[in-house]
Image 1 (cartoon, rainbow, N blue to C red):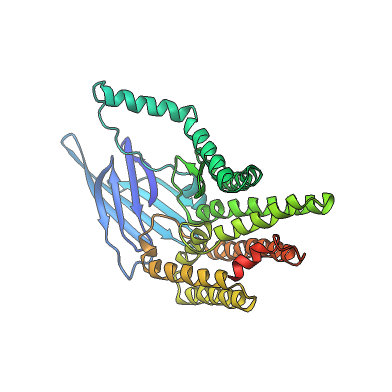
Image 2 (cartoon, rainbow, N blue to C red):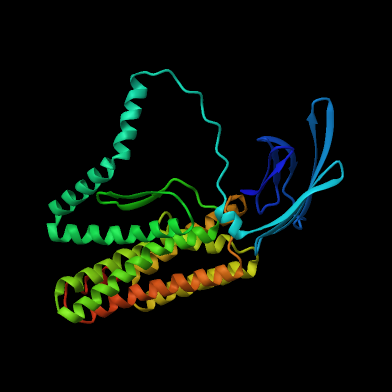
Length: 361
């Protein structure tokens, strides 16, 4: 991931690195210094390199003091042993930074293929693809169920995906909007990549949080009006969002659990994470939620196999506070959705009890 990007002799001096300890320093997109991963890495490092200005050789030195959790970076740049710049960075700076763009290829002569590509871009800019996919989703769900069910389901998907969109905009990310895909749900797309685990957690959780809010509002509408439609929408929307919180990639819950687990350096942290997952599995089976418990096992095994590769990621890890807050936020959202499903199952209505029966299957 990009750790630092400053000016040196009128050109960009960029430092890339990872938690494993390796670092590569680029000057004007050309590698000038490298430090390999080391088990003894303690956060302090120094890059020495030479730059050529005409016939003159300039000696440069970049001193780095890096701490990953919480993330802080102190740097000082020396040119011919004279300090020319210094500063610091934190996790907020990482969240706001934009990745270095690759050089644009040379423009090709106008041809039929170029015309077709231009036409496709125009269609995208007119949002025709979104409209077509939304129409296809509405037609598909109406064909297999009913128009009323299709509209309700699409409303649930849009609210969920809008939560992701709002989180992306909170971090200043450019978004492409919401795409509804028949029988696969929806997608909230962005033009930019995330830089931190905290961004991944917030963006992943805000979809189910918005979904939980919709279920609560429908529950209140049911209490006020007594209309069974609001009860059904509340219960099935809660089930939809609960499945999105299962710790299985690429679901939202998989991203949250992965961000928490991969941010833990110590064996104690990993054991705590495993213990919490085991407790969740035990509670699921104790309450008779067999399907939920089984999928928790699958998700934990999947995350476990990937845990060794956590140092190779470009994402800034969560600090201790972020790990605890993310865990509590995740569990609170899951508990709220399960509570709604459990409430409607207790009404005695067979249809409203169906979401709980799905979890018990």
